[in-house]
Image (cartoon, rainbow, N blue to C red; front, side, top):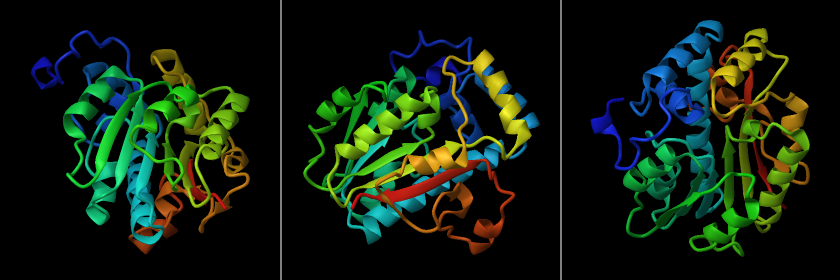
Length: 271
């Protein structure tokens, strides 16, 4: 990524160490990444050969879950935590395509993510988007800022795709998820995706490589741990499954358990 492609104010960002949002952008075919991100992304892909497919499967899950919320569940409000760099089919684009009045709040604490979001994630005239600069652990501040755009007396879809693994303490991760779920009313939803351990020895091993090189360490958890985030919620079919298998548009893809089985997801409804 050359400097002429950077939004104003991003020249001082750290280009010496890889960052998860930029590596993820690289795997998705984006241009908002540096050489250090591409190098680490390629190294990881050599070890975990389906990591690019995992990133795309995660994005597909976002699109399908948001479509379900907007088209089938009547959800018009979205809180996207750990939004990452803008790419194709962002949350507000998918939601507002089906329901133009949808309101979306994006949350991230990476300066590059936020500056791109402010430049590119613009709402249609009938809806609204907003951006909160905060660490996902700062639940109270996020909810206070999000309430300027969202009405928390009405159902909200809480999106936590690829963010909870950066809360490395297990108890803290459970508490953060619980507090966001507690903040939304009956009829709200939680969509969550998380990498799991014990499925791929390559994934288990490459995590150490990532944590040694990056500015944002992360952790793997068990399939049961991920299911535990939905305690008290009604988990929608097909349950906790690899992202490619959550209500796929192409049934053949959903049946292919070889597509990144180590990255799982689920959707739960608050009764």
